Each structure stands twice: as structure tokens, then as C-alpha cells.
Amino acid sequence: MDLESAGAETNADTAAPGRASRRPPGCNQVALVLQGGGALGAYQAGVYQALHEAGIEPDFVAGVSIGAINGAIIAGNPPERRLERLRAFWETITARPAGTWSWPFPVDGDEPRRAVNTLAAMQAMAFGQPGFFTPNLPNPWFSPRGAKTATSIYDTAPLRETLLRLVDFDLLNRNPVRYAAGAVAIRSGNFRYFDTTQSVLGPEHVMASGALPPALPMVRIGEDCYWDGGLVSNTPLQHVMENAGSARMLLFQVDLFSSRGRLPRDMMDVLSREKDIRYSSRTRMVTDAYKERFRERRMLRSLLAKVPEDRLTPEEKALKESCDAMPELTILHLIFEQAAYEGQAKDYEFSAASMREHWQSGYRDTSATLGRKSWIRVGTSPTGIVVHDVHRLEEG
Image (cartoon, rainbow, N blue to C red):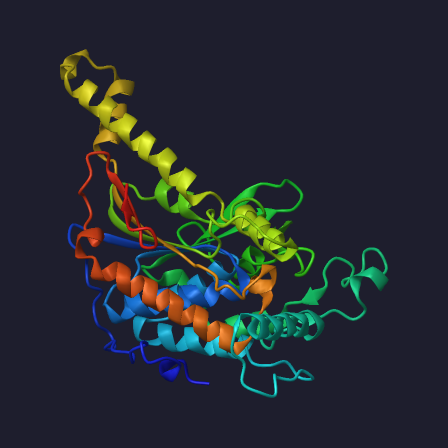
């Protein structure tokens, strides 16, 4: 399968090797924030393709779960190889597992397509996915307590080999592109970011971010064991905003689950909507909280500026300096919107057809966003933070 020819609207790779990243107006840093969502992560690959073709390369990539995997492939390769490696990853893990079969005739219409998707999801559960995970034998329910196979349904050894093949971890750790992956420590329940500015990362750090129980096994790093960061927060947005410093940052927040949705009409709708709400991580709530925080800090800066310098205490002077160094952020919020035939299994339905659709959806949404030139300007709000949503054409 060739993603470059998967759809007429997907352009060929136009990137020139070694080219410099294009800076949008008023911007000195670009961040890519990638939510978790399993098979839906192909949407993020489409987002990156549109950015890559526009000459916009990230300076900071942060992800959780599948977002951490996509992010590692992006940050762990030179710009001219990133798209090629993303394609290789998604083509690898959406190949049909041995022992499975495809639908023997063309599929059209919502109900037939839902049936095909359900079959693909069932095959993933039964056989695993190439280059990603394989079923544990024996099954955990038949494994002795404390055995290696007792705490997860699948083994992710294939994912480790895939990461070692597609990610240059030496480059990831010395690259000026900052990379972070979120995971949760199992014993303490504390959320942690593995960040290349703080430690040397390997495939185990990426795998820890995507170790969703009970399907995938915990990952030991040092003295601790970790599970998928999505158990606590499915988006690393806060980590990026907390580490923005005084940057003028254009931030692409890519969500695979929508906090907004329709009222369910049957049990399949209920299961799908529940999953959306659980994993959307209330991205808008986070951005609204930061808007208020930025507004208050700017008001405080204005008040402190009215006080003569010799009347300020050392603590007040330090507070004034920190307020003067506030970042300017423009957040472009891209949200995957599922098709009518996609249900609660959408995040573990790894068919090649769905992967291509998700990839193209991310490409189209990002191309539409970049077409709105006024949206990709930084420093256009008195509060210091602006949020745009491509789906609802609203500005905040």
C-alpha cells in the first residue's frame, strides 16, 4: 500500500532534504502536541504531513500513548526522513496479521463498513498487529500469579523492534527538537514526563507512555514500572504550556477523542461516547484555565508597573520579571471526527483502509487550518493566548 497515492487530495512529498523550517508570522517556536488514541493516531500522521509540506517543522514534540510513538518518529529522524518513517510505521502495524482474512467483495454503505471494521477489530484482539503487539501465551487469566504473562493480554516486544528500526534514539536525545512522553508510575499513581531536556530516552520510555492496561504490559524504567499516561491525562498540553518560557509559540494540539458529541441512540453509541469523554482530557478546560491565568498575570504586571522600582521588595521584583517573561501562544486545535460507521472499537481497529482515511482526514483538517493565514499568527491577543478550532470556525 502506498499512502502517497491513497487519495487524490494527498499531495506528494515536497520537502527538500536539509531545508530550514518556515516560521509563521510572529512565531519563534512551533510545538506539536499529540493525544493518545491507538489506531486513530494515523490522523496525527496526516497532520504532520500537511505541516511538513508547508515547511513547518516542530521545535517541541510532546505525546501520550500513540502520540508518543508518532512524536518519537518525528523527533527521532531528520526532517527529510520523518514522513517516510511515519508511513513505514503505519503501513507495518496495519498490515493484516497472519491467519486473518479480508472482506471478499467491495464494501460500501455505513452498515457494511461497520461490519468490516468490527471484523478488523476482532482480528486485532485475536491475533495482535504486526510490528506492534502479539497475544500472550498463556492468556493472563490462565497464568500463575507473578508470571510474566499474568498482567497483560499482549506482548509489545514487536513494538520495541519497530521503534529501534524507525527511530534514531541517538538523534532523538541530541536533537534540538525537544521531545516528551507522558506516563504514569503504577505504584504512586503519579504522572511523569520523560523529557529529552532532563534525561536520555530509549524505546522503553516511548513504550511506557503507550502501555495501556490490561491489554499492554507495564514497562519497567529504573526502579519504577509505568502504564499509559492516558490513565491520568491523555494530552501533554499542560507540559508544553508550563515549559513555554517566554516563547512566541504556535502550538498544534491534535486530539483523537472529541469532548463534544451527539446524544447516543443505542448501546454502541453509548460505549463510543463514553470513551470520547473519558479520553478527551477536557482540552478546552485546560486552555480556558490558562487563558484566565495569563489574563491575571498580565493584570498583575500592569499593577506592578505602576509601583516605583525602589518601593518593590526583592520578591515583588522577581514576580514582575516573571510576568514580563510570559509567553505568547496561539493554539490550533485539531480534533479527529469519526465517521458514522465507526464505533467504540475505533481505537483498536487497525485496518489499512481506516488508517488511510484517518491519515487523509488529518491532512485535510490541517491544510484547511493553514489556509486561514490570520490563524497562524502569534501575538494577536491582549491575554497572550488565542485558541482556534478548525471544526467550528470559532476564535477565542
